[in-house]
Image (cartoon, rainbow over all chains, first blue to last red; front, side):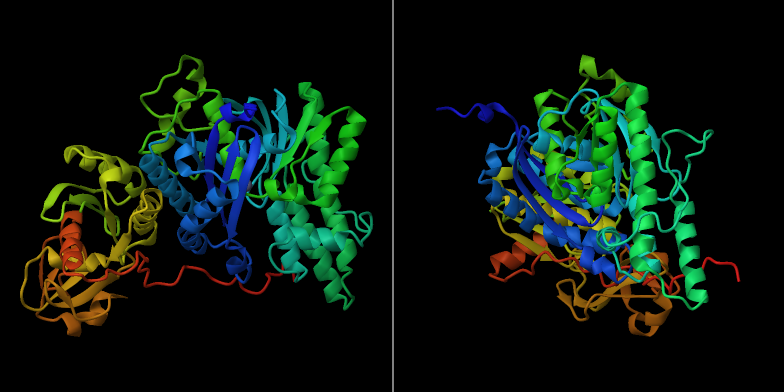
Amino acid sequence: MADPRRDEPLVLGIETSCDETGVGIVRGTTLLADAIASSVDEHARFGGVVPEVASRAHLEAMVPTIRRALKEAGVSAKDLDGIAVTAGPGLAGALLVGVSAAKAFAYALGKPLYGVNHLASHICVDQLEHGPLPEPTMALLVSGGHSSLLLSTDITADVKPMGATIDDAAGEAFDKVARVLNLGFPGGPVIDRYAREGDPEAIAFPRGLTGPRDAAYDFSFSGLKTAVARWIEAKRAAGEEVPVRDVSASFQEAVVDVLTRKAVRACKDQGVDHLMIGGGVAANSRLRALAQERCEAAGIRLRVPRPKLCTDNGAMVAALGAEMVARNRAASDWDLSADSSLPVTDPHVPGHQHTHGHDHVHEVSKENLYS
Amino acid sequence: MLLLALDTATPAVTVALHDGTAVVASSSQVDARRHGELLLPAVDRVLAEAGTRLDAVTAVVVGTGPGPYTGLRVGLMTADTFGLALGVPVHGLCTLDALAFATDLDGPFVVATDARRKEVYWARYADSRTRVTEPAVDRPADIADEVAGLPAVGAGALLYPDTFSEAHGPEHVSAAALASLAAGRLAAGEELPAPRPLYLRRPDAQVPKNYKVVTPK
Ligand SMILES: [Zn+2]
């Protein structure tokens, strides 16, 4: 019997916007391979991602990771329908390694190339877990690099920013608090672990931008980070032991309280009954639990992919690439740029000569890509 | 044989195709900030000019630098991935060697390219085919004694006339020279180096200083 999924696009996706070299392969909304090489250990001693270290690691890891993904998926490169790659946003030098590889691979195989947006990919990855995205979908993206609320009616063509952090990303706050507590890098998983044994109400840390006159969907974590650091230093100065578990739990509660409160509010205000959460911080157990609780109370369906699909990976890029092929979006040109500040409103970077009638909105906005 | 040569280690984005006898097509563009955008279209143009396709290529050779990292990686990553997709060998050659080969000099000389930050990537040669020092990165003033009185080629030499008093062209590497050098060595049965980047510098990375106290004293 013929497999009906054979008709769905088979796409390989490459992700190098930060410190993960990710190569994923999907057929439509079905995940076939998710190969990752991470340079996180090389960055740990620096307390943060060092761009040049990441770029060097991407160059080393790329070809072996592509090989691994093809083997894992059990497909031949010549059967691919397209190659997708993160064109931005991200670290410029790191992006360039992935874009160079994707172009060379697509050109050599004679396949179309799709330069896609990293943030839209974080949203689209949920199709691999929970099937086609509802339209519209509200998305809360939280990681070490981004904290955004986005509303999408069509992930290949229409992503609207509702709000974003005005200072630190949520994941950055986790890293900084972990550093003050001497818990190492990255901070997210270790704080999550300690917080499970602590009291989230032990210390009343501030909730940034939650006043009646504050921007309803924007975030701020810089004041919280400073408040936590001051509280810890006061304890240390007084010669008292720092209650790491209670600090972790109370800090984490302050972050996820604001994130979920604003996300649910955005859904209600916009009349959207689906919320997806993605990005590395979506692996946080308390964020998942509180979001579930608040969404249920508000009658909103919550979609959170498994943790491995929330952190940066190639499968998410492949997922968005497959959607581009399925919806007949224009491919990118061979002179595609790595654009470290690609606007979130550009889900992909279509080529110059292609002018699809239905695609006017973002055809216009890519004028500034080469400035 | 059909050898594709690429180099992005200097401000030039340069591509050439060599059929085992001669260079059949080539392209060089100088734009230090657009290596990523320019390389693939250049490959496409060179193949079209030669009236062939990428799948006819039997080997790839890429300049391994030394060169500013971001641009250098564009050529290396492209070459590596072509090798994977086509199933052909990928060789590396020092970019300074290709610059030296383009000179046809038969006495001692120096090759120096711009390493930015007031430094040069450089090496000394006995003649256009024979390098006698390992590629290095230094401030021009610090190597003045070692290069004094020698003819010098490359943008690094032209940039610092106080150190390189007898500087002349070529300024940048050409893939045509890279291809010819590689084709000659392969024909002589030589094994060419692996395509590994010559960074010569450690990544810029500082371990953050001890946690900064934010409480007012
Ligand atoms: Zn991300």
